[in-house]
Image (cartoon, rainbow, N blue to C red; front, side, top):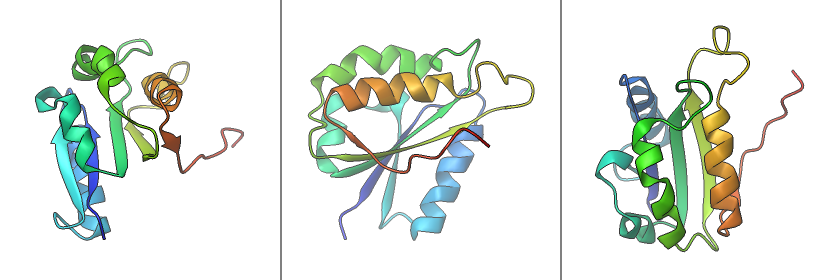
Length: 125
């Protein structure tokens, strides 16, 4: 099986903790490689046919700072043919109005670049 690249941004460490748990649940480092987006380059995405994107709820519905810094670099990535799943962290009670808005920002951009989103989940409760 080809490795999955899990690219995450974290401000407080919570998203990294969840990324590590996903890696463990999928079978470890031989299956999922963790890449902190703060240290990533567009070329890092080339090695994976399947990627997971992790981002926290941040500020008032904005991208976490490392994802914000990388956002324009997404244009340089050939997402066509890649399967892309997303996960997010945050406080849906305290930030109900903008919980995981950043995930939507990233999904919209990556889908527009040809990434095939997998794992949709309804929002109607």
